[in-house]
Length: 307
Image 1 (tube, rainbow, N blue to C red):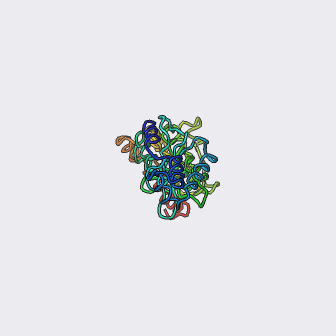
Image 2 (image 1 turned 180 degrees about the horizontal axis):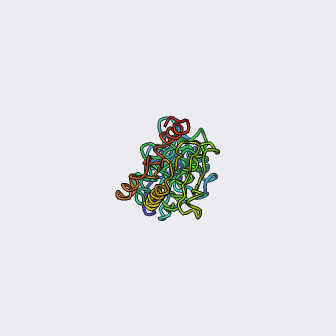
Image 3 (image 1 turned 90 degrees about the horizontal axis):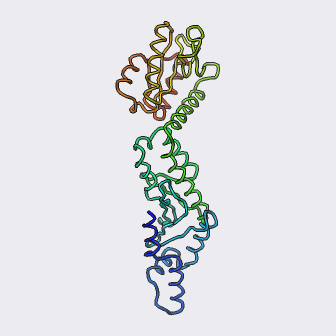
């Protein structure tokens, strides 16, 4: 990437080249046709407008930001910001119709697939983080290409937002499995809190008669029903095994309940572990992210006595 950028600076017409070409035209000297044509066609002949864009970039982001022409109405944006592997962010400023936009040309999400499975990016906690980052800074995902239209005259603000969004999206690959589990459990609690009234739910419930030491907890018990719901958040094989043991123990205690398992991603659970779990669980949802509405409907029906 650094070699690519060095080559770009050496081979592509820069802003300075464009200005010199324009001055040469006025002085009657031979023109640098490539740089001059780029400036004239994109900016209506006002070469300084491109320079003004670069000054905005430098004022809003960093003094070292540079633009290098890559053709008609297209500029590579060089910033000092690097990813964990040392490569710089890939950013292009280009004109689309009558508007300017910033684009990563598909590189940011593509790079995530080097370390993550594609489905981990398209669903689950990581996808939530990505979508939140894009929404916060106004970026659009066009089939994997991240794009931001530049508001009228606000080039510096646009680049600042674009850089922040790319850095935040790129950081997803660094999140540990433990942090992902923590996010999933927080999402689970948040969903149940929003759907079930406070007087009808108890998180981390244990049976006061049979489980005084709290060895067999229920992630959330929904009460006020003929058979209370025992809700479990399941992010891993280990949790699926634990819950299977818990449910067998509840049966030994002759407890009346309906068990509901909510997986982070059921596809990640070992088939044998999953088979044993489904033998003792009344209802399960393969993914929290993809089944929010179904979970909501299920709980609503249970609370109103429909289910």
